[in-house]
Amino acid sequence: RDLDRISLILRIIELDLREGGAGYPIKDNIHRKSCPLINYFPLHDSARIEKLYAGRRYFLPTSDIMCTALSDYFGAQVGFYFAFLRFYTIGLVPLSVCGVAAYIQQVVAETFDVEMSFIIAFMVCIWGPCFIEMWKRESARYSMKWGMLNFKAEEETRFQFHGEKTYSRVDGQIVRQAPVFQTILRRIVSMSAVAFLMVLSIMVLITLYTYRQILSLRDVFGSAVFTTIYGLIVAMMNLLYGVLAWYLNEIDNYHTDSQFEEGLVAKIFCLKFVNSYSVLFYYAFLKQYDTVYPCNNDLSLPQSLIDDSTCLAELRYQLLTLSISQVIMGNFFEYGFPYLVKKSGRIFLYVKKLCLFLCGKSSRNEVVPDSTQWRRRSKVEKQYSMNTYNSPLSDFDELILQYGYLTMFIVVFPLGPLLAIVNNLVEKQLDLSKLFYSMKRPVPHGATGIGYWKLALSTIALISVVSNLLLLTVNRVPTAFWNSVAASSPLIFIILEHVIISVMAIVNKLIPDVPREVKEHTARQDYLDRTLIGALGPP
Image (cartoon, rainbow, N blue to C red):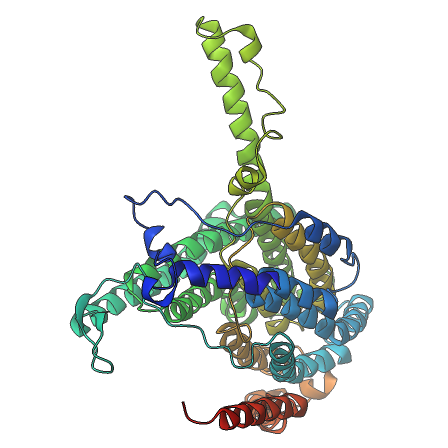
């Protein structure tokens, strides 16, 4: 396979001279300013790209065969991203069907107080943990298919790691270790910075809504404009937090790449969770107690919604605005901005040559840039000019945010799963085009799943249980049955919350993470290994 050949070549280059390698540490030298090595990357196979891109399906999720082909070409990390996107999109189908029925009933009745709101909320509470458990099983199947069951990343010391040289207590080799006090101090600094940024997100929310009260933006147009602007601000702050999380993670001075990734995922999730969802929790659970600027003075709504003191109409509009803003801003900076930079570079070249001509330092024939200059470049030069694709971290980040938007407040906007399916199908096409034609071919990396994003999914699933049950009970969104027992709604919430969390625990225990066929395959491989090693005998 291409993938194995690339890994073997890199291994030979970095292997010690005494072991038959070239003894050239690429990963270390590429970060040294004194080293002439600027970049390294495997080349794209044009014929294979055309074949893979022709095999995509426009209006359907990525096929299982396509996921395997992408894993063979780009590596298991990218393969698992497309496999998760496929599984997630298909898993949204039952939610979208129920969501469409709930939305239609809400529109016809002109109220959120319908039976389908109750059904969709309980459905997502059970769907969340079942989805995560079923993905674990699907991930194990892909690991078996792609030969990643026994994969274990070689934990090498990161070049950016700062430590003192000392002798290892395990094998006596010289290793780098950071002082314990310095490590603790770095963690305190980074955690304090993360906490400050989380508080900053809440302060931005409070400031904007205070400014809104001063301007008295209470009509339909003013509320729509303000909500849209706030959605764009949240999307831009999410992009900024992604960059800041990376720098804060460097402060932590992690020893290995896996530790670095774990810390980065945790920081990104905490920052973007507070920034993206704080306003939604405010609308859902706090604004109804705001006597200065109460609900329902913002939008012209049916009387049945105006009488609803839980601000659900505003919550729906803000949820929709945040979701759309996140998609637009993310795609702009991922696809539109690089395209504009590329075009602006050519415009700058044109202006520069024009100025030289006006100053008499060039001939007229040199003013207009040669349009064939790009075509005359070699294959390596063209691919060197492409952007670098490090990992699917940012792609997973977008999916996790989307997962939170559609699960934690599905009672308010039941069309969320359907819109997520449409967005995922478009995102699949854009990601394939980006990887094939706009990015350098990444160095293949092995993986056994989606990594620490599973913990983020589990956290959101747990929070979605609490938020949806609060909307159904304490915040008075339910059917007439619950209205008759409104006085005991906190007790109902506690009972339902314990029941559903117990169901989640039972589901976690009853559904094994590894399917039987994968366990049998692993046992068979272990048996063959023991048999072959036993047949060879002692050296």
